[in-house]
Amino acid sequence: MQMDNQFPPRKVPSFCSFRYGLSLLLHFCNVVIMAQRMCLSLTMVAMVNSTDALGSPNTSTEEHLDHIKNPVYNWSPKIQGIIFSSVFYGVLITQIPVGYLSEKYSIKKMIGSALCLSSLLSLLMPMAAEGGEAFLLACRVVQGAAQGSVFIAQHVMWAKWAPPLERGRLTSLSLSGILLGSFIVLLVTGFICQSLGWPMAFYIFGACGCALSLLWFVLFYDDPKDHPCISISEKEYILSSLNQQVSSRTQSLPIKAMIKSLPVWAIAFGSFAFHWTNNIMVLYTPTFISSKLHVNIKENGLLSALPYLFAWSFGILAGHLSDFFLSRNILRLVTIRNLFNTLGLLLPAFFSVCLLYLSFSFSSTTIFLILASSTGTFCMAGVLINGLDIAPSYYGFLKGVTAVIGMIGGLISCTLCGVILNQDPESAWFKIFFLMAVINVICLLFCLVFGKAEIQDWAKDIQEHTRL
Image (tube, rainbow, N blue to C red; front, side, top):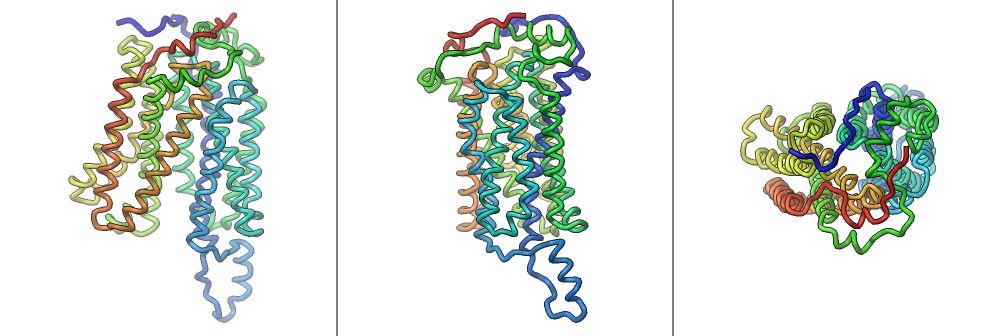
């Protein structure tokens, strides 16, 4: 069976190589970014807790000290919802501009500066909360813009650092930090709030981010050929493997060609379905657990965290399997992308339906819930990196556009779920999961029919071979 492209047969160290070290560094950057984003959803419980035993004798000093350690604010549920959602508006507005600019300017400076800004804002978050909800909202929006810049710009770096046979492993390793960060923050934030006070959660995650941004500026270079620490053999391997794909483009974006390109729309539809499903499972899993399993809040937190751990494992597994199939000539690249798109979109739909009809016990419900929430990460080796296959020269812009389309799907799904749960609580979960399954199947069929994995003609016109 022939591969889509001919790649250098030379073997160089992989897991001990510099490119895998960078992927691991980016993995931890994503862990911290997600911790900074999600910790507010848990600290909010302490920030608005107004159950003090007012009027109890001999407790005034304790209450005063506790208020210093855990300041309490009188925010309504509506204000809390606005504060929660504000970060997503910041993320949304940066996707396309950053995707476009990341192809023109230094990735090193963009990611390092954005990570540093997000971390500094995390350190300032308790002070902003003390200043009022308006200051906190402003901080969250700007922090969201910084985090969105990191998420988009990191995709573009792999156009120059990831050999085609290792794209799955490198991208899945770095992106899986998003999932591990979510798991960690759900486990440790409650303990931090209880032991050290909720402001310490922001200080700890902010300080970690500042340290990682310094490491990033020291260790990362935009192009492997300019890096002073990488070995000669690894540098030659990366450059030779990309000599037919990496280019420096000088012409304007082929917008019309992109709009007419069915493979681009296949990525957009796949991204829409992925974010639709992911937002439902991330935001409404605790609600589903509470309504169906009737557990206490600590057990709910643990059950809500478990899917992230499994999703982290599945994401890394998907990357390794995709590269294994490609390097051994077992499957063509387009077949690999279709396989993992099928797993990432069909399995969550299947296990969600199982939740409706086959959940006869606590254990079966838990298993199906974990699988429905975690198997979507197989898309990390499918639609989420497919843009790098079809247009490496325009990957940043393409990723920004498809990410915005995906986020729109996510916003629609979580809003619609809220409406359905409010109007018809009895049959709400049937409607939510059935609609999710239908959307996933429709988008998957579009991906399977029109998805491609070779560089498109409109992305080849201004290609230039990389010189060693």
